[in-house]
Image 1: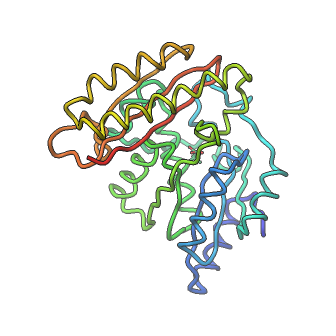
Image 2 (image 1 turned 180 degrees about the vertical axis):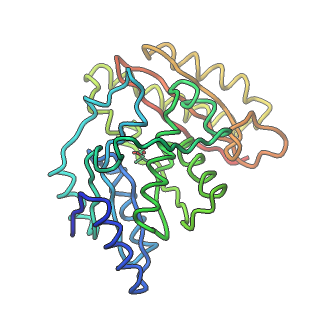
Length: 281
Ligand code: PAF
């Protein structure tokens, strides 16, 4: 496995690889890898001859009061895990390597990113789109794998790829849960034991809502959302949102909706967690 720190060297090596006719998959991450990320690497192997994992805590997707400085990092452990999963390349640039000091270009998706986390974290998806576009350009990947856990992010990236004609196929890989049901996230490590117990309300409320909507259909979606919101509010420190939306448009579902998605974001202590679950109609 080869590790690149410089973007030009990474770009050159990936171009050389592509010239040999090999198919390349990219797995963009911010490191501190967990089983969810490893499942993305495994998925990537199914679609390509070689897999590159990027490890980069992207400063421009964090707001001024967010956890950029304390975002968990453990590069040596990440390298071991990538090796274990037989990744071929790691791209791990420093922020000043990734962005020129006078970089002044950003990519803004204006529809799917406007609600949910986008509304509460101004500039977040602009930062995500910009770094992901750079990673696509640097890697020249044929396929890129993202977690369905970040449901809004996955949809925003798919839209960006469509709108800007990036020649890359986007694969969404299923969310991975811990044995107790909590969605895996690098941020789970911030939770105290007591907060982690309370955080289980997220997946419990979402699963209950899914069951209720599977039984009662869209007609019950409003009351089910209210019940889930009530449940989560009992145990979290602050609920950012609980929404039942059309899975494609992230708008309120209607008679044309084929699948809906129930999404929640809430704080447990100072840790903001997100979770989501899809329901076929
Ligand atoms: O999902 C993440 O870890 C990040 O948002 C991503 C896609 C790697 C961009 O920094």
